[in-house]
Image (cartoon, rainbow, N blue to C red):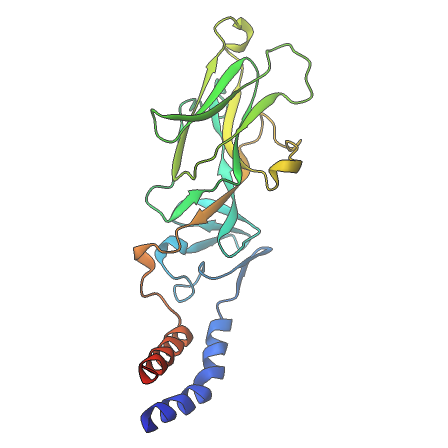
Length: 242
């Protein structure tokens, strides 16, 4: 019991310095504050998957997946700049059956995103892999006067990767060569959703929300010194009371 008491008093003495050390990991890149478990300095992120690169001191990127962080962190998700997949758009890169892959990371697209597509005369389909469709939508016909030139659909699954494919309507000759795009998009509250007016055929990226696996084996053992000391005393207390 005497040893535990000495350790307890020692912890009280070093606690302020431990707090000061952790305070050094409140980092910023541009206007974005980088919270735990992410970090720019090696001592601030819990795992290399959460390393952040601050480009030109202004734009933070999750290094592992090369996606720009737009901010709006919560305890379990972050909003990123998600690349758009294009078809029939030579100036943008024609990747009409392109994919976005987060497989080798703890991140995944959460159910707070929907699948969207911009253009006309095409059906847009999203696949959880290259063969199994999980959602899709139909764009308006080319020439139709509509407020929104595109379509969207909800996707119930959490996705570590997805493939999008745009195919022209068989009887829509004007749509065969029309530039079109597809993407996963963060929408927030589905009940009050209005498609953002600033997302159009010229958009190269759209906001999407990612979550991460909190119990990933890679993160096992990555704790701050404060947490380890707390766990030590908790385990001793539980042992003493049994």
